[in-house]
Length: 148
Image 1 (cartoon, rainbow, N blue to C red):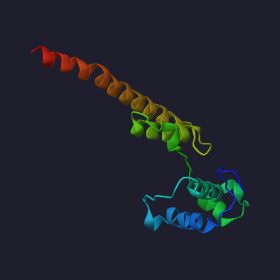
Image 2: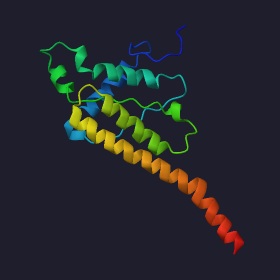
Image 3: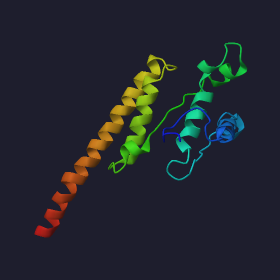
């Protein structure tokens, strides 16, 4: 029995699913596209995504391969929603995670990294503002209304 850890190796026969997703997300005629991978806990969703991440990495192809050139412009970003379970502002967590990964991605230069840093500051300010309204503004307004 295998441990319940995700893998980029096809131990479940799900490569066909990763290949289908890859064909959709790399077809310019179909972009932009949003896909969902659904299944029970432990059913192999993350493994499908790890296989896809492996297949889209241009470093896994020879330098004269058409896939290497095709995938050079693709950035695979990974968001683990379990890390933010119960998080009060999931949108900010998702945006922050995406921006941090873009900023750290080896394919992007300093110009993109600078823009990412500015956007990340904006997201952090949104989080602070939301927290301030929720934790201070609402109770203060409630107290004011009750006292009238």
